[in-house]
Amino acid sequence: TAPERPAADSLSAAWLEPGPYTVGQVELTFVDESRRTAANGEAPGAPSRTLPSTLWYPRDYDGDSLPLIVHSHGILSSRTEMPYLMEALASRGYVVVATDYPLTSGGTPGGANAADVVNQPGDVSFLIDSVLALDGADKPFNGPIDGSRIGLSGYSLGGLTTLLSTYHAELRDPRVSAAVAIAGPSAVFAPLFFETTAVPFLAVAGTADALIEYERNAADLTARADNLALVGIEAGSHLGFADIAEPAFRFMETPDSLGCSAVLAALGENPNALFDELGTAAIGVDRGRDLPGICEDVLQPALHPGRQQMITQVAIVSFFESVFSPDGEQRELAAATLTEALAADFAEARVRR
Image (cartoon, rainbow, N blue to C red):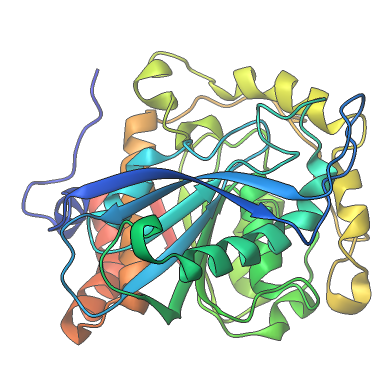
């Protein structure tokens, strides 16, 4: 029942192997004293935002400087939702940090509140500041972070956080130089939204995603801006991206059925209400666009989650390497993997640029 792997001599197979570095992992807690955490239901607020975080890093790195990736989790999820991706990046010389956001993680007192996504770009910027400031015994990795190689990734609501942190006219962090959204909601964003910067952006999405509909959130992304690329995964589900799906959901025809009720309960009667605080059509946040709901369509049979995660890993690692690798030949190889080899090695992968 294991997923079929690409041919051993293929480019994709090489990107599925660990990189040259062993992976270290450390738990850190960062506290932003400058911003409040709002009250949430019966849970009281706080005068600060506390960010319990996990840092993955190349343990035996001996280069000049390292790129940094900040990963944002989905609603009701946690910072450890995708260790397969975090470890793959760290083994290739990246420092990766992910946090449990104060009001959207699965352990949120009072229940996850998706409306707090408007505050998460500020958390992303604070995490960047905090990792850049690590020093002495608090800094587990060798070498400095390269401030010109800071990237973002995000899954589901975290993909929305990544879009806001990259492109939003008021919330974006100008230090971001490459970004990835995995099953991220983007239907609300008009082409104007993406005009703030030409930062390379990759969306990874499944065509059978019941929570974040593929057609309106992903299929037309490359028509909205020239710097956007899309890897669509035929029959890819929403939960298939999460680490827990492999092998736990191997035998489920429609794993998204597990997520629909939980996410709908967290989002309430109007799942699109969370966009209300993100801005207006004047900056490209256009609630007049055709916005899909959550789990409105009949659930579709899903691809093997292991196969889906392999495509995701190859796409994202090669994308970041095509932008951040200091070696020109490696950048070219990574770009060729993303634009040509991925679809050749996986029949389920569709690549649009």
